[in-house]
Length: 225
Image (cartoon, rainbow, N blue to C red; front, side, top):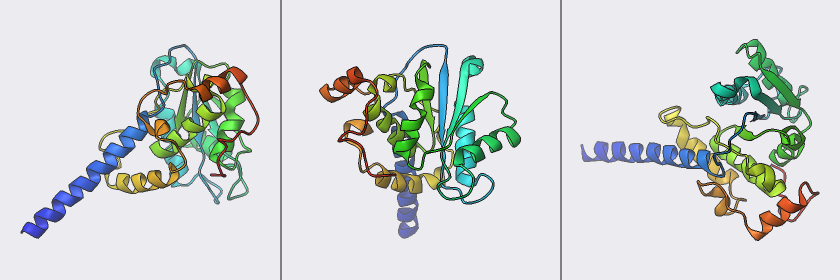
């Protein structure tokens, strides 16, 4: 009996840990930017098939539900991802699924050259210059990684980051411990400040980058991933 109770308590603790970490990551490096225009960037995942796989379908749904209802007419949905594992670019597969399966009829832009998360951000920056609010849709840890990369590349644009609807309590609870383990691995290259669940504060490094605007490669550029 005690063993059963202990296993049950341990199981609940693991599930709670997964919920807590994913919630924390979902809120890190986001603020409360205001404005009437918005971009939701949906990051692609390796997809060798001719149609969107489970992970990419999930990301599209997160992206669409992240669109603010009061700004729907002023929101662009940006799908980002090249042909990293198949013949068709991830971005195109995402867009096809959004339109054919989910009947999305809003503004869609496609960025189909990226093969890494760093490149995702580099290549969508020109599509973000004129919007007031930016959301990045993926799993919470992966989206945080992308937000950190935007902060490194363009801290002025990172000021416009707001939270996407990528975390909901009780949704995929059983899978969240696995997503948490994935997140701990994928976020190893971030600094503690980049993992903190509050809007980033300007540092001497970010202020310098902000004044410089868009720049070429710098010491913060990570390995591909």
